[in-house]
Amino acid sequence: MDLRPRKRQVQSITGFTQAEVEKMENLLIESREQVCDSEVCKKLAKTFTRSKGRAGKPIAKWTEVQAWFQNRLVCSSKDNSAEDNQKLPDYTEGCTLNKANESSHIPKGQKDPALSDIEFEARSSKDGAWYDIDTFIAHRFLSSEEPEALVRFVGFGLGEDEWVNVRKAVRERSVALENSECNKVQVGDIILCFQEGKEEEKYLEAQVIEIQKKLHDIRGCRCLFVIRYTGDDTEETIRLRRMCVRPNILGRP
Picture 1 (cartoon, helix red, strand yellow):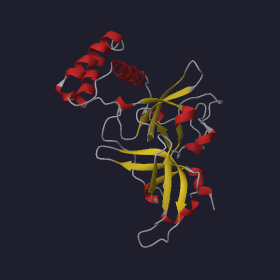
Picture 2 (cartoon, rainbow, N blue to C red):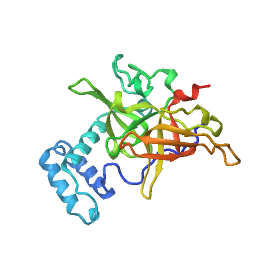
Picture 3 (spheres, rainbow, N blue to C red):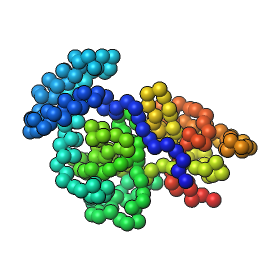
Picture 4 (cartoon, rainbow, N blue to C red):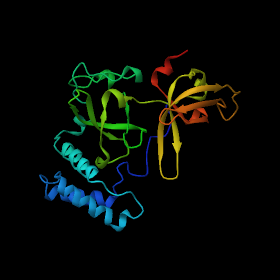
């Protein structure tokens, strides 16, 4: 049973306010063909930066405005039913997720029935945290032949859709362990650690570097896990309840 809370974040990943998103939505309806023009995006970003609603926040970058419009146009061009939007993107048979992440194949064409219950997560390039994927919206191949997918994260709107590298930043969703399953975690395992701040909640990737076994009590597992975050090499000691593990760990005796 997966006991962890769904991933969510209070502050927008892109940093656009609700008023700014609404303005871009209206502009998209009025001037659909011109919204991605660099001059239009620069003018709009300058307007956002000078607005009272952005006081105390980072300046709005025109490249971020342009990226928002580009992603929005990709979304609106997809005339799919709700059922179709739940299907994984139509990648080639040779396109697989990174084996280092214990990931699965993205099927070609229609979704494999065996994968109907599988959930996925992706790493956001905005903050390096992993978020649950709600929908695979579109896909593309870069000039380097690297596959990317446009994903919508659980709990976020279309304004937060993001292109992610399929091989490096998409994998089967991490899971929580029961108190009695703490013995499945081993030194060297890659895990996700839940971090809760005043404005946001997120999961960051880390590696288990030490395990201190403790007797369980009425509160559950009391073992301590020393982890090292892969992003900045900082270390922290946590308990099992803050940890999510790769699904293959569940198969350990």
